[in-house]
Image (tube, rainbow, N blue to C red; front, side, top):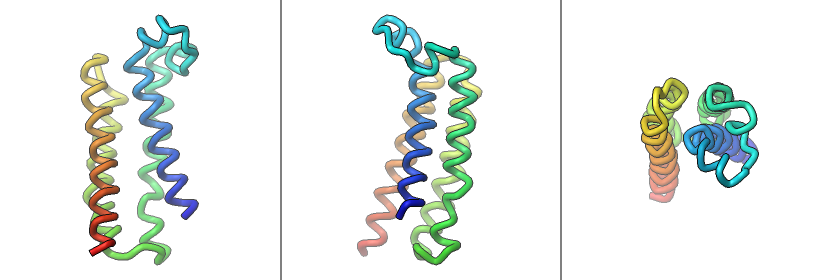
Length: 123
């Protein structure tokens, strides 16, 4: 279960850093000291680009170690490429508006992954 918690932590960390990079101006207005404010948007996006792949890499470990069954594998096999694509698009986003779109899509993909996995496990 610690692995699942670590996956959630890495996902949320990467997503939050990316979101802060997209909300840089509002963070400055509110005097919040986010990574994006301290180090700049490009650095925050690079850090997000490290945290999100760290999330993707061990996603299949619960199945490979026998902790979770084929429903998890199926959900992960569909969700991981989608989330990896969204993460790459966030890091390469040319504008803040484009980045926000992919942050929302990434969060929706994660939420759908969790709902489908939990739902399939209960059936």
